[in-house]
Image (cartoon, rainbow over all chains, first blue to last red; front, top):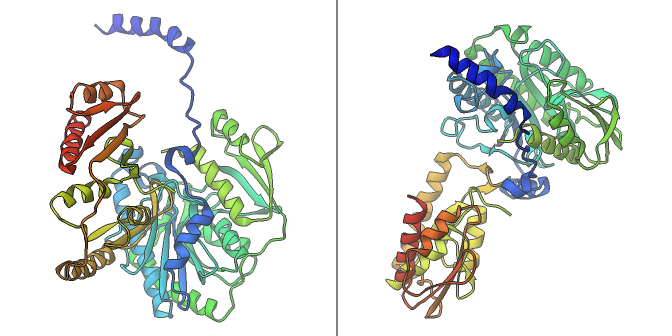
Amino acid sequence: MIAPLLVALALQQPQQQAQQPPPRDSTPPEAYYGVTEWREARAKLEPLMEKRGFTVYIIGDMEGLAAAVRNGTEMRPPTRGGGSDHERFRAELTDEINAVIAGAREAGATQFVVNEGHGGTLFRNALPERLDSEAILIRGYPKPIVMSTGLNPDVDLLVIVGAHANAGTPGIISHSFAFDSFTVNGRRLNEAAIAAFIGGEMGVPMGLAAGDQILTEETRQMLGGSPIETVTTKLAMSRSAGAGFSPAHVHQELRAAAARAVRRAKAGELKPLSLARPYQVRLCIRRSFDPWFVAQIAQLKGLRLESGDRCFAYTSQSAEEIGDLLNRIEWIVLKP
Amino acid sequence: MPGILSHNFAFDSFTVNGTKLNEVGINALIASEFGVAVSMVSGDDVLIRETRAILGNDFVGVTTKYAVGRMAAITFSPAKVRRMLQDSAVVAVRRARGGGFRPYRLQKPYRVEFALRRSYPDLVVQGVDSLHWQGLEKRGDRSYRLVTSDARVMGYLLDAIERVVLR
């Protein structure tokens, strides 16, 4: 029974190859989902914030969480090609954010904005019922400026948990958005540092980053000597293995580090990341991405093909505008 | 500005006497046939804003989240939202008992005009056509008009259309 079937399949194959693949959907996000402009996201968040308190803006990514090592199964739900382990790490993400909130509150922080930063689940990872009930949670996709939605000058301190090391490093699940490399004025920035750059422009310092030892070391360097707190959740041994500290230990560390970071921010010891204008961005799209992605990205306004077939330059006076560009690139590579 | 998962029954547009009604507005009009007023509405900021444009300020609005796209929002914790709803319900019932809300009124007879969603297959349009609903006039490809003095009749038509769409 099988042999004739194989013959039939073999006969069909050339015919299938001759057919044109269906055209890829290039509808801009506005037309599909109505992505709100980043200015509008800010205009909606700002009135919700009490001005006189101390606000911590927490970005929740997932690769750097305690014990997380494997992208395929742990970072995505089964509905997006992942595994049931993902549910466990959603709880871990929520607990690590709660630990930061608890520590920051001990040091006098009064308001907490949590922004989902992990795309594997289309930015819906933290468990709303488990998250500190005072926190404002920004979730869903697409949303403006990916990891810095609604970030504004009323924020006093920027924190990132579950962060991962930059593309090209031996960190656990290391990567950077859609890029093999991303620099501003020649400085390499990982995802955490890009958020710090967007915050830095509006005078908001990053005070705490948590992830593996590669992430914590490189983020310290990228933030140019500002005395940020870091929590090393695990020691990377390869891109998908490491020696991890227990979640309970990591939560304790996060709590203590968040309290120290708030005190540092209050004392004015943290320096917002400030780069010279105009910002000269250079980004190379991942080698692993289909040429189709690159062709779509090449059509984005303001991008100039610089060298090779997938490295682009972009010049801007605004870090938020650069964040918006990242969002448009994410839309191309991360279409729901 | 898009609301979270924004839509209106089976329609791309729905107006009564030229006034755009969302699902809340449609139900408010039906309720008014019984002399019942809308006292409280909860949903995202886009919903509350557009409902104020329809019903005016004459209801207690609870903004549970702020849309930053059709599928992304600035949200409050479920615990906080439940507290907001509980507190607002108290205010709404007190005001209602004091006669504080008026039923939503539009001029009769109602001129109900709507267009079925562009995204639907023709089969749905044919299904609505074959309802042969009394008084339902086809005005275009997917647009219709019904004139009635009873908002309940409009409600029964919506029911019939939902049965075609939701099969």
